[in-house]
Image 1 (cartoon, helix red, strand yellow):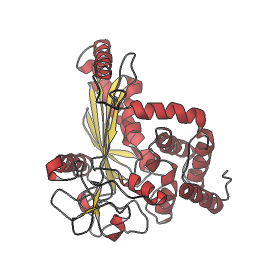
Image 2 (spheres, rainbow, N blue to C red):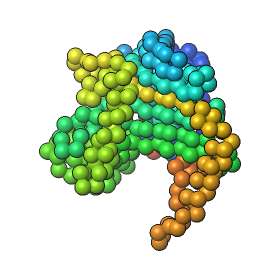
Image 3 (cartoon, rainbow, N blue to C red):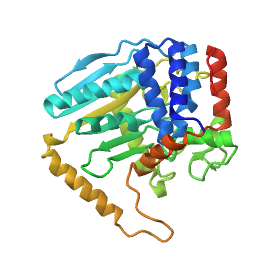
Length: 356
């Protein structure tokens, strides 16, 4: 087990060693470690070496000049200047919040960025301003559309954070694929099989081989197949791709640059970098905030009291598992898989840092 501070301090030193300004290194570390705290281990420090490799490959600008290239009172398009998505997305979210403060809602589409960590942390920023937050991003094309064998879309997550009065905030954060690629990577490290319905072979047949993507296979949309609603997961992923990239001028579909550094970005790109879409809505732009939050409490309390099927304790409210995991890991520490520890020790050696 490692304490939050141990991992945060080490992560911050790695970003500083890459040349990130102090405030950006701190922000990127906060965003990355939030994933580990919330139990989304696939998107926390396990990704740190991946960002380093992208930087070494010249695909991340550690000193980006993030700027608005087009805007209206309630919308903006932001150019991330090739920066870390961990830094670009929070800045874009603040722009959305500023616009919502002035006119009720704010919507920002981002281009020329990189992987931004977990979507939930960006949506949750709005909670600090008594607003509803939304965040989504497109990602490396690993998901095949329904009835296809081609990898055309990313796992393209969607997150929505809703404030409450006394109950914990409602926070939905989910991939539009049956599983995020990071979960597949964890299974690979553990040398375990993937659940049925997550992936298919390059011929389109079901597979439980966690390494199937390396052999040309593809992840499946949320729902796994048409009978179980994969066309809906495919549609959701498409919406994320359009809002994040077609709207901003980022790369979309099969042109999205891969997160792994050993694969080069596609030739003849249709846009710039990876795209995000972030939004903030001031509650009192719709109804008095206190009224809304009281009814959100009632909504949550009502769902918590719903009858449960045999073998289950209660109905889970979106955000509950992550909140409970955060409380647990702040007290007891954050576990790391052996391959992740080895990666971090390798980074320590590379940058002449201490990791223990």
